[in-house]
Image (cartoon, rainbow, N blue to C red; front, top):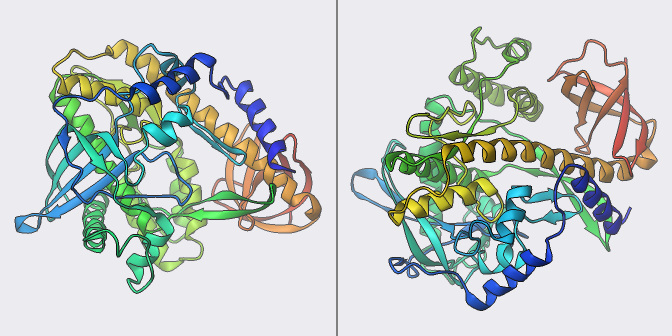
Length: 484
């Protein structure tokens, strides 16, 4: 199977689920016109180009949405600034670009490549926070106390420059061993100091969230590897220290932005995760691993159990984490307003939460940025709560469909790789049990498929052994049977 084969399959899968895999001529023309006219620069944007901004993302990421910088304050507090790319300045409401983004609602990351929400003229160029380039941003300026509490926040427009584009794996390795090389470390003054400060700050933020019941899990996703235009492997793309660092900063910035809109009496789009419907199965899993959970959903108790399990069985923790993630279910969007409070996020242990820090990649973040900029300008909200209700429903539906496309294309790639391994037996963990079938994920390679026979008695989180019986790369089918 070639890259072109996967690309055609991905486009077909996107169209079948209501996505627009290609941009209209009008949207492309608008994107090119933005190159000529540039963004609308607000007159009150602060000049923060001199601050030691940097980014951490995947090695190959080109749509950079956030930068950060920090400074120590008296009493053990820290000032954290998170700069979010000002995408709203390029994508006005009602434009062809906006209409495309409103349909797709997200960039879709498949084994065949990325299908961006916005044309690459914008998302990987003009509105991306590239190293060495002046960019407009919305800055979330936070004061974080020594115990990890966010005690103050302000938002404003600014001009920023990314002084160092860093990668997760390299930063994670350097944080563990500072003798290792790290690009830009010698060229950017105080970059090492910034990384140490960020790492310590993220640890404080994480510790406070976990004290309130945030879940600490380890999961891995499969990343396709191509050589000479052909798929050759699916490798684990695992969490690491640098990814956790950025996640903590984004959670803090997202929560502060949601509270900012509340304080201004504005409606907003919130991200929430309801208490798990299959808490009884999570209880059973805990019992199988020597733990005990209360009868009602309790995030703090679950996190304590997960922490003990990580220490007792580090090798098996990824399987347990995957099972719990599947049982927790997917997050959703909803509209909140002055008379309609938002709902909490069970997994993150935060009440005021929204998606705001990736406006190049997610439509809810772009909508939130429009609301923030209207509040900053003293203008009325550009959306009513009723309009946000419709956007929330559509974004939730499209996120589920995007995940389905990503799974389908990944399974097609995996089926191609497993084509010569029919009859082999693999260790697996059960990831889904529903009317449509029982599904497992192999430990190596990271491949999911359906158990066609011998699945009786299996439930999410069970470990089992399965035999590969059939694959269909073009349909993305991988079929197993249970091995007694």
